[in-house]
Image 1 (cartoon, rainbow, N blue to C red):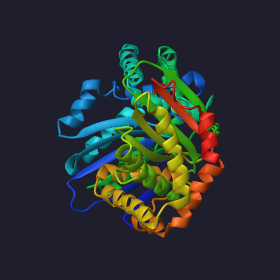
Image 2 (image 1 turned 60 degrees about the horizontal axis):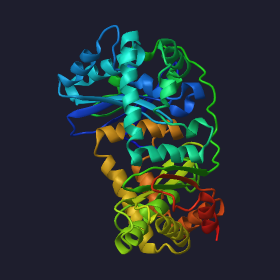
Image 3 (image 1 turned 180 degrees about the vertical axis):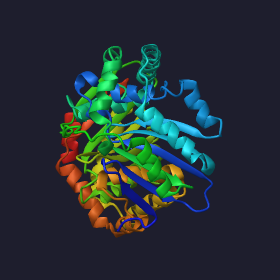
Image 4 (image 1 turned 30 degrees about the vertical axis):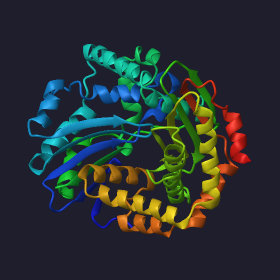
Length: 423
């Protein structure tokens, strides 16, 4: 069932336009989601999708960098972008009277970045500082290391920011080449939500992007989960622990049970991990579990920070709770997790930015935008047995990935945790 309030059009060159008018709103979010991100990079290109996102804001033939910012902020709006492994997004939020302006600015920076040599050097310095900041933030960098441990030697396992030795080499030709290879109309989705008119947005998209020729961006490298361990011993106040198991993809039958399992396990203050490891044992301040998905793989991640003397106990208790949850999750726990998922879905419907993001990603993944009522119904239909069965599948195929940082000498090896999971 497709969301009846969503309208979708496809231009002759393959670019898709998706909108949702939200009555009562006086603002709108409009943006371009490009289905090209970190996992579309070759090894020598690692970090270029993110570099390109930065450079889009550094000037076009019509606007300087400051004029790009001022165009939106002069009308009280907000403009931003992000890069993930699957997508690069450029978007703005403005009042309804400024939707045309926002579309003009977003389309301008996506289509016409100058790639000025001087600005490239300036932004290179900014990104190198960003990389340095990430390396100095243990609870950021550990997730990059966890990704590398799970998918070694693959685009899926590399960082989004890229390593410094790649970033220092990128020039105009590299940026232009990535655009030519991946920024075709078939890889782009224009999404707008809030006080918007579908026909108007479609006409704007046709005028801005209709001339683009279709391109063949090739086939993405399929992700191959391997699992393994990355351990960095360093004198820090806390030992940082991140454990992951391979989960389902967006397209798998247990997509919803996977989310419910991770939520019940570590999705909030009432979750098993929080109650057992923080509240009962006092081994950490922060602990959580979450699920992440792609079209060909997925990951359940657990993170905690603890003392170097407590990390072995924390690791063993975490594994024990995963095994126990797969065996005896209760109806109350499953219903609570389902309520959290449904509430998150429905709360997101009240935000134009969340709506635009949801529509663009849904269209890219499933080729449609599911009706929220359908999604809520699918969540509600998940049974305790479905969730436990998902947990059993996690354990049956467990090849965990483990990342450790700080005073971690006493942490068990990933092989020991794998044996404990399978026990």
